[in-house]
Image 1 (tube, rainbow, N blue to C red):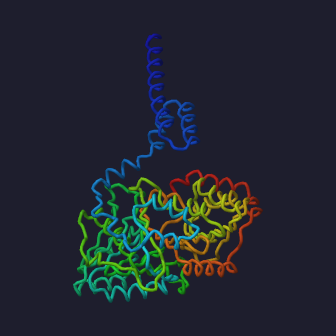
Image 2: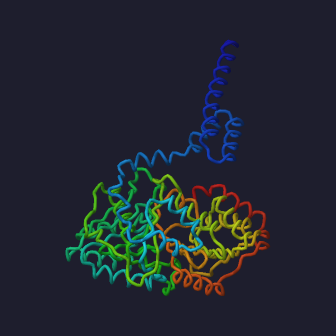
Image 3: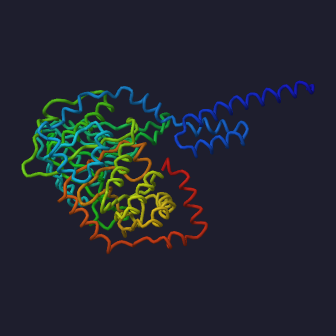
Length: 483
């Protein structure tokens, strides 16, 4: 080949690389929210000819938002969410209920479209031993409708008992709808769906996995846990439908958890969330008083509550913003329980700032985690909160699956979201906030009672990890946005 042609191809290659590198670097500079991420990608693009731009197009571009628009494009708001609002809840009543957490209330009013509703009652149910009998009794007494979302619906004795209760309700003429996540119940959902479809129960998988030719979509999962009976009684929290939540059984995969029985007007907001998910999964609407009966504040019930639906179809990471606002508004104490701790830098800063202001911040984590890499990632973050006075406790086995935050013995956040980036951004989650001093005080006392069965984590312990362990934890931390 003549020398001029070789030089010509070299020039063409250089111009092509320059063009592609310019496009990739420009995209990173314009669209990356974190300047550190932008700088790292620009550096890789420039240092790795051809490979750098290719890696950026494959790994660096967040296609999640476009995927959400494409997949969820048919998701319509089938009704005005403000129809939940109780006109008798005056601004003065809200101010009295939220007390000194007015800052938190102002932020959350702007983060979610749903209103705060008064006159609700929340009852904590510890583990499957308390939650499942109550839930099953409610299903067996249903007259109009039963709606259920579960991330996992295991084919074990608990799953079969729920399936039988749902089928019996459907046989009585009750409208029964079950939505199970396609990955959370992977390997089980097909068997359970076949079992339920032999009955009158309408059962639908949420974004099902279609292998070998379909795509395995690990994001956009429905991690919500919701049961609503007759539109008047709801259950939500951290529990799936699984025998693993029966802690009295000495099984290797058992886990402690917390669910809540909820009655009052906020049940309509919980039901709205199910109806939207059902509409997304099936294209069909559920409406009428069988699902959304008129709700009035309950006599003698003092909880001011709001439902918080969070997911990749929303403009804001609602749960994340709620937690940031809660740490900022706290005056005396913040208690957080989570099975997975993979925080954002913003959340770490909020925890540290609260501690530096003199707020007692306690973080409860499990000592044994069902996914070892989640423990490794958490260990890589802990030093950042420990060195500024945050108290960290590891609960001894069984695995703690509870998700809970309590602020100043006044405000409680409960539901399905973990303190990790997947819950904040990639999964569909559902939580409830409650301003209720009695509830919050009781939960704070319960958490304090757990401390004798916990090991307190110290900064010295974290810093003394061997170098190979710290390298392993740090490497896992690099992938924390996707864990």
